[in-house]
Image (cartoon, rainbow, N blue to C red; front, side):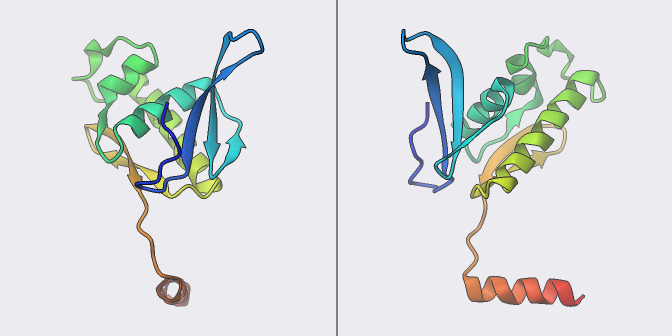
Length: 135
């Protein structure tokens, strides 16, 4: 699993969780060094996106992770695609809630990607916030 990421500074770490006898209990997610309680499915999907950081992971790949038959991928409006959207919505909001320095982006008709958020100097960020609230 990925170590603390120093190259992109995303603050995401996923570690294998084992009990005292060494049996696997799944994985544990840390964002900014704080443990995040979420489902194993969310962790599995986020780990896949993390492994392909900055690259699009196709709907077909994500559906295979969820255990769906990926032969449907030519069709655009099947329930499996809706399920993937729901998981990505939850993961995106989880990352924002824990102030991760990355987000989930959507590539229409392709899939999703995990991308680094740009760093905005604080003075510039304050001006941008003030200009957005003024309109």
